[in-house]
Amino acid sequence: MSEPSNITPEMAERVLEANWKNVIRRVSTGKTLNATELGILKARAACNQDTVTTAKDTSDLATILGVTRQTIHTWLKRAGAPKAQPDGSHFVVAWRQFIETNGLKGATLPDSNALKARKMLAEIEDRELRVALKKGLYVLRGEVEGEWHRRMAVLKNLLYAKLTLELPPLCAGQDAIGIQQMNQSALDAALTEAAGA
Image (cartoon, rainbow, N blue to C red; front, side):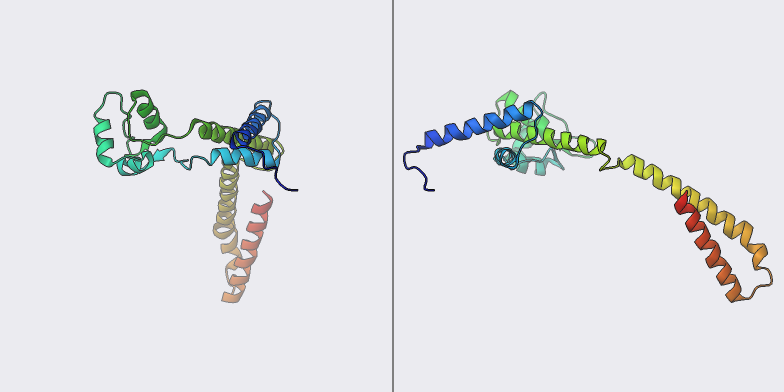
């Protein structure tokens, strides 16, 4: 199918804007996006490549904001300038708000549509993660760590009991091969018991 030649750039822009509004409407009503709509959202979000929220130092902050380090040092002297964190890092979002509020020139501020698109994309990912958690597709890290610590404590107690309390009397009078076999047996029993705990 050939593309009609009478489509002007203005018409194409109106169609793209209408598609964007449809994506916004679907997200705001909590509906799932199809692949095309998700692609539109990702494309709009990608208009601004800056996804960094924290700068490790003033040099990094200057690079992210598109200014020199000297400009950052000058701005730091202004009233209300965001302060560095104890580790020397800076919150980029706070700096962008400070720049916009004070009408500072020279910094590259993100496109508001791109920011909205990235926000919607993050909300969709958050919603999908919550649904996956409810379905039991993921386990919270804290739960995994808690279970791991519990199982390690069980294993430690079993090994301690087997190797210090049970084995020594059984090994009395055994040769090296007999002691080795008894140790292996005790270790296998402890691991099996810990796995079932």
